Image (cartoon, rainbow, N blue to C red):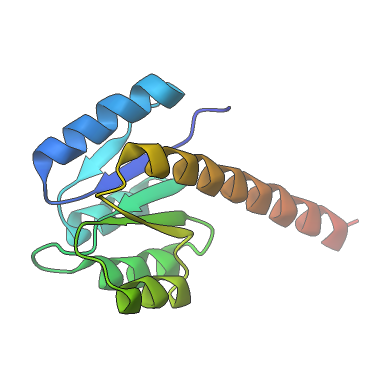
Length: 139
């Protein structure tokens, strides 16, 4: 797998460190980390991330609003919601807003890692599809 550009957004600093370490071991990537929605959006406007792991319950801008803003910046960025405070309603809302998937923190890394990998593959397919469409447009 190519090196994915990955961003973890969660106000729990210890969790971010653990996720970063584990994802580095699994995929050889060094994820960037933001501890708020506002910080994440500033980073996303500067760096073309492939996948964002996003918590829902954060002080300030919550994960749902952050998801909306991420999709407004770039619809191709794939977002995996990772939360310990989820409900069926938040799951449905995340889907409506364009999240790739939704994982409960209770399920942990065993479910998160395959979702991140799937999100990255979709991101790369979208990139290739847009490139093909652009080439066909000008051919």
